Length: 322
Image (cartoon, rainbow, N blue to C red; front, side, top):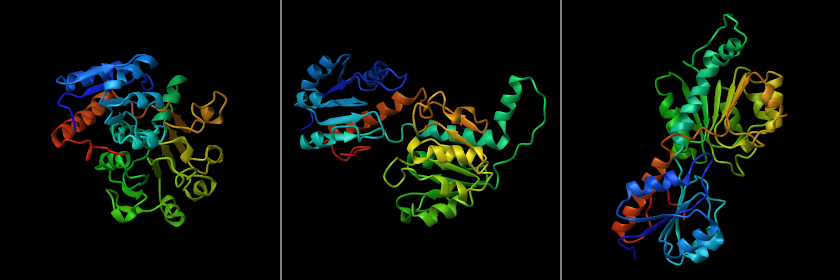
């Protein structure tokens, strides 16, 4: 049974440049009727876990789970959950939710921004500004371009939503093409479908999870299929693109450019050839970071706490994965 005033424990480990103290304050503000605690050391995590009905954070140690005898829900602040002790949580009948979709608005806007940079050649203007050159160059337009979106989850859907009004043609690639999607055409991950989509694409936005199916999805064969004016935008995971083959494609003009918020390896070593290519934009895996990060994660937690309180069990929750 769900207690009327569950204790919520916020674990200490935050995300890049994001303090868990801010998350803690958001939860206290959103759920003032519940007791919320913040652990700042490994020992505090174990001690405070003993009477916590809900624990939330980016990672979870086995010893915390073992101490959490009252635990009913672990609310992960990450989209992926493979790093969590899921078998142990399942053994203890603990529900698990994730933060899928929280980063989608920021990532989608960055993907669209990267498209506009290459369409209008804005990076050339920035490069010329460094040397005070006033040299005309020709920009293009997105209208009538074909954009392939690999992955039609929260990020892919957010990209599609933001592309409305640009007059582009869209192709979606997803695990279950029979479900359709928001794009003009939808295909699966079989080789023929992927190559047929790439052959028609001026822009390819990678927004899918990294899995056995998608690992190394874009390699030498795929870059050979892409038109030379194509731009690849990766806002998902670096391992979906074969890095050496990408470098070769960029150096030899097989594709026009790339915008990478994620790389393989990551962080990108200082001597990596991608750093010196003028047709590559690189950002340090920050596409999903916005001022609304903790607010959106807190909204998921708030909704799920209230569902559990109303229904009397931690099932049927938003973003439930276990």
